[in-house]
Image (cartoon, rainbow, N blue to C red):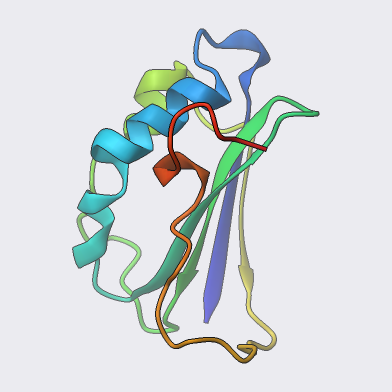
Length: 115
């Protein structure tokens, strides 16, 4: 398996964590639900450092040249990720959970309720 991590420093962008949450809620998540070979994608943010990003977990045989949804984050932010890396996944473990995704993330919480 492989993992990709992309981080943007939003300092030079007109976008904010809040505006990018709206993008996720309105249009950003759904296009990724049909990507073959992608096990998981989650979006991350850090208000303290004004960073926004995504982490993706890929099957070992996923085709990196396969069509992907347009990179709207880069388009909205106005520049490519500050940091982009791909690495091997050494181990994966899941904890005890209900078997379904209960929390979808801050982008899907009522507006005004954020960390």
